[in-house]
Image (spheres, rainbow, N blue to C red):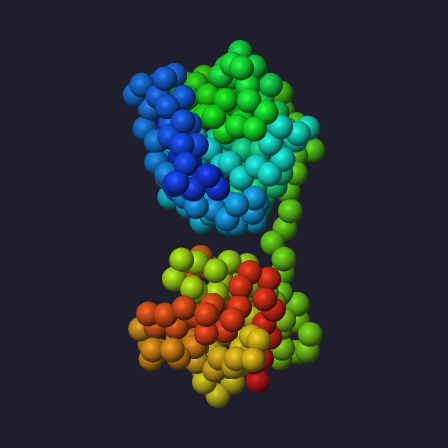
Length: 267
């Protein structure tokens, strides 16, 4: 039912400050019965791409009619717009800076509205904390069943960007980059199986990944298939090829991070 809409939070606010708690306080002040789930409040600071990956990987596992609040907002207080996106099953509140780009790419049914219904905002509105005064307040009202049409007019010029795609440089060689380092030190590449279908049948004799001064020649199906400090590759749960090591940090072994380039060779 609309009056029981679940709310999720995805932010770069961290856990050491009051920001997330204040947002939850606003939501519960508007709807004491609100149910709130933290997806991730440790998105890399100001990193819109990291936020876009976080919400893309999680939102589809939530019930229909969930309100997802996604705040990675380096432009807070500027002319950037707050938006409400409505898809076939979910609602999203976010700054109009591209943080919902991967959601937009996955959804066929989509309408995006400029959030202008100031009577739903917490007043006065801080120029530096729209997460509390605009997004949390609107989420609270949406959780009580307020219709998206009452939040603002539909727009079509919202911001979006595409995931950087790997490039095929020769018939058997692909160049790409690391798009994320997770908490375990796994290096998430921007390469999906569709970018290199031959990976499905690749074995030790025809697979080689070069990253920095490291060579990875082991393609496996689980992290436990490698020895300690042995670099390996596998298709991870995010749908991208990962560079990993068993119970260790591939990022440390490769001295690599977000943006580090790699070369994949399939003979």
